Length: 113
Image 1 (spheres, rainbow, N blue to C red):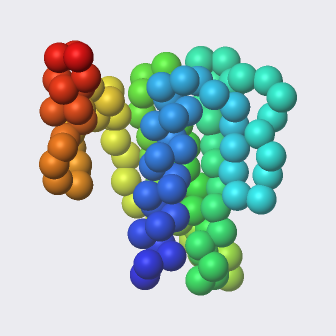
Image 2: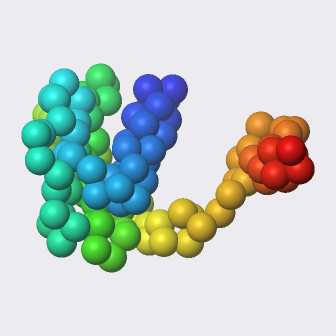
């Protein structure tokens, strides 16, 4: 279960980076391509979850939406795990901060000097 959580967290992090910066397409075991992905193309990333399943994450950078699928390698069954518009997520500063100081507090301190 920890592997799945890590894979989802890692995939989500990469997706946010891809949506924000329109960066190169990446995936487990692959190197980044030499060119940036145009902002109007769908981005697909694949991760082996190690338990007979593969996770495929799709990003629509134009609409800032991501979708996560799990594929059972034995049966070929595809399960949609979630779809999310990340536009509003990217506007938050402190969600899930690990205590003090928060990013907002660090910024305030640095602006005082």
